[in-house]
Each structure stands twice: as C-alpha cells, then as structure tokens.
Image (cartoon, rainbow, N blue to C red; front, side, top):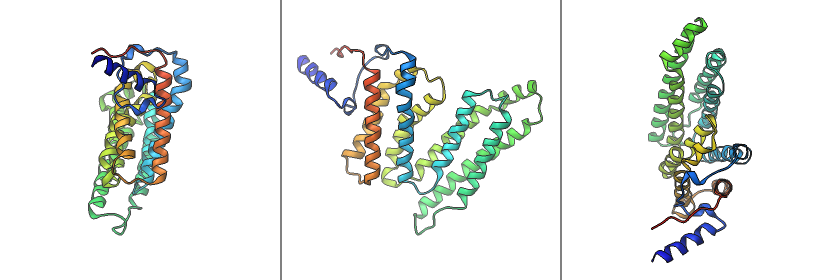
Amino acid sequence: MTKIVCLITIILFSTKNLASYPYLHFKDTQIEMPQASFTRYVEPQLSAIVTDFYKIIKLNQLTEIVDIVAVYKKLKQTINEKNIETNYVEIYKQVNAFEIDLLKLSNSWPDLSQVSVKQLLRLNMDSSKITNSTYELLHIFEAGLALEKEELTLFIQEQGIELKIHQLLIRTRMALIDQSPTALHDYLDFVMSNFIAPIEDHLSQTKDYRQLASRLEELNMAWNSFHQNLTKGNLKIDSQTNQTLGMIHARWVSILKVMLKKPMSLPSE
C-alpha cells in the first residue's frame, strides 16, 4: 500500500500542471532561493494574480467598488513604505480622496431593475459602514494636522491610525465580495480571505520570500479548491471569467515551479 501511495505521489509531482493537485505537502525549510530571484520572478507574478482576480470581481460586480479598493491598497502600501509622520499630510489627502470616491459611488447605485431588494440593502449597509469608518479616520487625521512632530508621533500611536486603515481595507474587501452574485459569493469570499488577501498583505509588507514560503501549502490548497469549484463544478461562469481564471492558474503554477525547484523528499507514511 505504501509503495502505491508513493508511486501516485511521484506521478502527481512530475505532472506538468503541478498546481492541479490541491494537496501539495512540503516543509517551508525545503524552499531555498535568493531573495533577488524571488523579487525578480515571483513578485511580479503575485502582483499580476491580484490584478487578474480583481478583473474577475469587476466582471461579476454590481458597482465600481473595485476602484475604491485600489485607492485603499495604495494607501496601505504608502504607510508600509513611508514613515507615517513625515508623510502625514500626503496620507491625509489620500483618505480625503477616498471619501470623495465614496460619495461618487453612493450617487451611482444600481436601481431595482438591476438588482434585488436584498442586494440593494446590503450595498447600502456596506457603504454606510465604510463611509462612517472613513469619516472617523479623516476626523482623526485632521485633529493631528496642527501637532508638532513629537506630539504627532504619540498621537499616531494612541489613535492607532495604521490599524484603523487596515480595518477599513478589510471592510472594503468584505463589501466588494458582498456585491457579487449570490452563486459566487461564498467562493469569492473564501478565496479572498485565504488566498488573495494574504498575497496582498505580503506584497505591501516585508516581501521576504520566507514569509510566503511558510504559507505556500495552505495558499495552494485554497487556490486549487476555488479553481476546481468554479471550473469543474456546476457553476455557470462567463468566458472572460473562465479565461482569467486560467491565467491566474498558470501564474500560480509558474510560482510553484520556481519556488519548489529544489528536489523534495516524499512524505512518509
């Protein structure tokens, strides 16, 4: 029995489409690659995966909330890459721009001829939560504009500004998923939480390959579960969505091939 299991495992590892097997077991210590190679080859593919995923969202979306998420992704990245104190005014302006975009969005809701009452109520509820959070954050920023540098440092820490921005990004992500068709909602929610969001967080933080390597197995399982459900299940998806799914899958396969280039020992019984 053990020989049969090992033979099957060898066949699965040697297949051209590595990511088609959802249960790829390995230890992150088995992954060794120069950080420069990761930055050059893997990170661009990760960025493209995120971009392609939002294309799928937009293809199946009721509103332009995808653009709102893009604004906040930029804001979160700014905070990670720049000192919040020395860029306080710039970040404040980005928060203000986000609020303006929200107002534009609220004036372009779909009517009942396009969506159900339930969807429209959910859209309004999500919008209210995001608007209130944004207004609170904007009010906090404005209170710190007149402070000196030493006071501002303490103020930023006490108010938890970075955490509030991160929480707002999560709310926006949730709102984005909430506006997807009912049949796709749970699948998109799952892959957003377990695959896309971790990749986004990785790209906006340290970008150390070891950070991604430590989660590669669970990311692979999450993506493959989602991909199989949408492409091999009973769901009806349009040709553009299906084509974009294929592009993401191909990108993910290429990432696995690069990161798992080092020979791996088979899992023991």
